[in-house]
Image 1 (cartoon, rainbow, N blue to C red):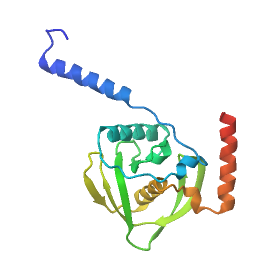
Image 2 (tube, helix red, strand yellow; image 1 turned 135 degrees about the vertical axis):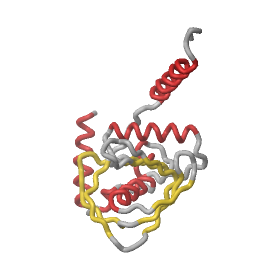
Image 3 (cartoon, rainbow, N blue to C red; image 1 turned 180 degrees about the vertical axis):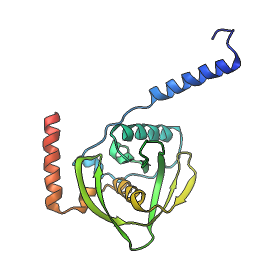
Image 4 (cartoon, rainbow, N blue to C red; image 1 turned 90 degrees about the horizontal axis):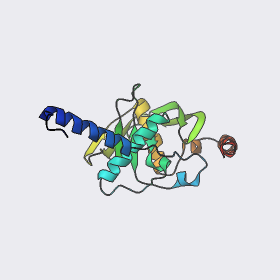
Length: 193
């Protein structure tokens, strides 16, 4: 760098280069689509939250925003670790990270919600799920936290944890509906190839 730059200018240049490098390191991941059998893999717990996990979280968020979606589980991008990202904000400004999430149902209240899925593109079905849950997880720094989400956040967390357990929202449907969706998606996938 030239000697005539002030310290603050040099810091700004270094910071800008770091941001450029970080952005270049992030990448879009391929989202698996039903009926891909890899979606049935049960994810293993993350043993250490390190830079590789944080890089995966960044890539998952970028992939989710690009799709666009409001939630993504690592299983959907063929990484079988217990990691979920969610952002319910309208402007993609409130990303949330859940590593090794565990839930407990708090009461009998049921929430009937229209669900869709990035791994089942173009299909939406009404699914019943517990409305009030307690969640325990680690954040992207490996720090444990708890929350008691309800409504859409509770539904979204349960949907993504299902992915970590090898389950999809279509598994809550009748065999007839599930098979119909499977055949339509297989037909679309053949057209793509």
